[in-house]
Length: 440
View 1 (tube, rainbow, N blue to C red):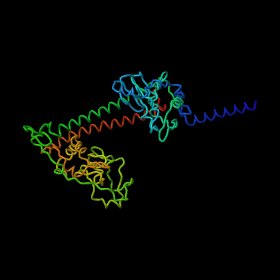
View 2: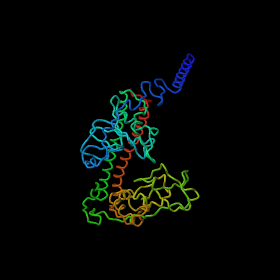
View 3: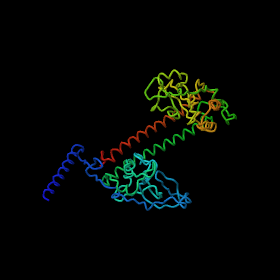
View 4: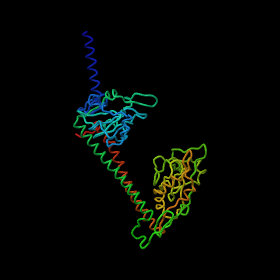
């Protein structure tokens, strides 16, 4: 018996020594090594069920009676979003909603399955209700939203996974002191508020652009220096200024098609002198350069006559219809997909024509005139017959296009700011939610 006790003591001593060696090797001062990784010394490892209350008894399951009342002011949450509003509420306060199941509830997809609900609301039986009593609910929302829980899921049939209540309660996490939780949540909440304000500003600017296009591209509003003393005339497109005309696209340029690669040949990722622009690379106004494919050197001569220049305008004509834009100079002379056409030899201000083609009226025309089949398509002849209103004075065309371009540049500036802010938030979460950076 004495020998057994001595052996146990020696084993425990060796275990502590190994732990100390690991901490010395991997942990900076003020940190410790735990089963969930390296964390600050004053953080603790505990189960979610020991730190938070899971209030699933408050859930309001989907039923015929609930559906009848889908006409109120109180949010009715599902596992990923507000599904509707009903005229009663069962829950009041601040809760983290954790999705319980879903076809795509896998690694790194907890973000779409985690929400923060406040005020008076309801939740269906596909999300867990988590509330902090001695911990911050908002901190848990941020922490859980960016946590990989794939190992905690159980499988229910083909492709369907579930995070049951027991698994959620047993999930071991590193918890900061409550004061630090609140400080972290406040910092991330402030960044979220900035992101929301930028998103709203972009939406507002886009609405301004749409309204400005409607006014300027139809001549309802004339710019200073143009149209003094001129009246309006009636046309097939409605009332337009006397010194404007209605023109077919075919009168303003030549519409030409792109070209697919010969059968059995494919694009490549490695760079050649022959970039190829696909519809997948296009967005309204331009081309995304991040995933450009290339034509093999031996194939390029076969499709050499189907290129697009930076002086042309492209329009997608198959699959996703009506994406309008201009290729950047770096892609000048690139090959164009057969699923897009180009307008070349443009006789008016190129950017005025660009914005006219992006107008609500033309986009509605594209939707109404497309052929219907296995894949929607827009015939070349239909593009040629689109009509736009246009000033006779090219200086006015340019002046209108410049104003719209300036709005686009402002939107792009805000979008870049939004993207940088989102990246900053990602970095903050990585640092703050793991204790690598301390705010207190």
